[in-house]
Image (cartoon, rainbow, N blue to C red; front, side, top):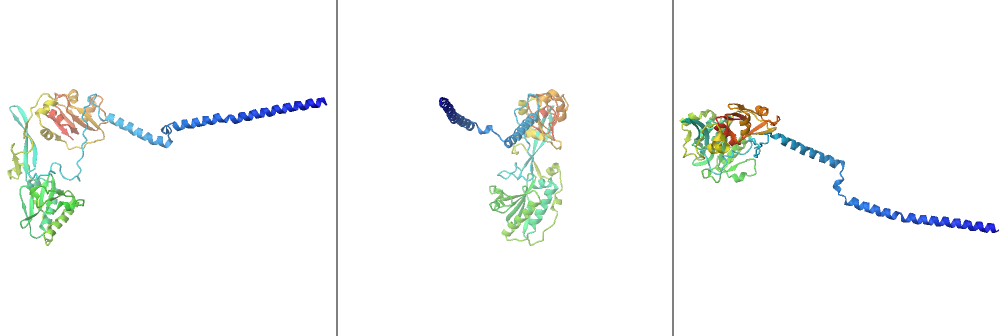
Length: 413
């Protein structure tokens, strides 16, 4: 019996210990997750604080890569543009803007005032006492002279417009120095004139009526000599010729005229065959202006041929107007794929007296000049002490002066 009691007590003790052990483990299992949850919250806060830009998708990376590539490409291209040792000038390469045929008018002609006696400059070289000087001869060309020396297309436009105007009964024409006027009785309804090389028609219409229309007109309302015909229309192509005929119809209708006559087909262009400037001067259709009559600049600009010249000396010896006229035109076509700059003093260093400078020779002789250059511009700098014939795509006026003053030639493509 005693053994039974002792066995029961022992079993109870073992069972109690087991239960206590289970309770302890249970308490530990419940308290352990708490620190882990706190760690998760902290980790979440760190993730939120981390900038989003540090995490990039594949698409975002793909978008950024081309941008970087383009930048690198631009830098590579910039580095290759001009290689003139460490002598690169601070001037920027001037991008020649091509003259678009559809641009409205000639910038030199589109002034508010009426410059009918348009001056045209030509350059003559004379020697006096062993010195060379350049003379700018100023001409004032009449409307008829400009028409005579215009191209065939312009003459054709002139003939067709004149036929159109004279197809209305009662319209008479008269050519003066500045224009050809068309009148109905004593009223002027149209004037034909040349602006630069472009044939234009001034009509007795209000230009404000044609703003924002297909008729691109110019107002001459502020020019006294066009008080009767303030609406200027330029003829540059067949479409504009057609629109001009429509405007002429409006003018005639407002003056009580209709095209009662059949459209004439007289070849007025044949009356104006080409003549030289000398012949037109003899016929007094071109006037040679004296120094006092010339409206712009100094007529006579002396330039002595020198063994050497600096940029400053060249500017003092020759005006920009003369330099522009001294550039010879070769009539070639420029390739603007990659532009390169070379300075006059660099040419003086690597070329000898009497040589011809070309892009290919520059590539061969000037150290570090890129072989990829296709368009060469020459800038004035330092001193030139050689007579050179320089063939390039573009020149600064200072470079032209230095080349010519030392007896050379600036030849532009």
